Image (cartoon, rainbow, N blue to C red):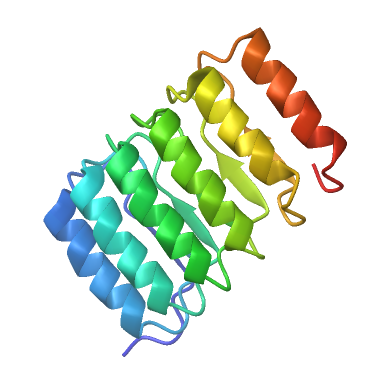
Length: 173
């Protein structure tokens, strides 16, 4: 049992959902890892679901980097459920994935029940105005998020208006 490793990066490797599942099982047992970087792999929805389960049972992870992993709405939904039960995660990077409005809505619901996440990166996804609206609604209720990256998301005037209204009632962003 390792009790000293706090950061693990496997960025730009060839990890698929089976590897993510193995890492998730390790997360359940680990008591020292605070940062896990799996950027630019092939985690996809199945791997995201496995990691979400690990997240629910892990008490130390504060940063999870899953950008560019072909994660879609199903994976975002699973991670949102993990967010609801996580008491330590402060940073989640899901940029450059395949998350659309349904996934954004699920993540927004997860934010409502999470009290630790301070940074969420959804840059380069495809959430559009509908996803922006869902996030905006939860911004009104969230008091921990301090950084939200929604760049390159096909958000137009309607989404910008919704976000502006959400920001009016948010005291941390």
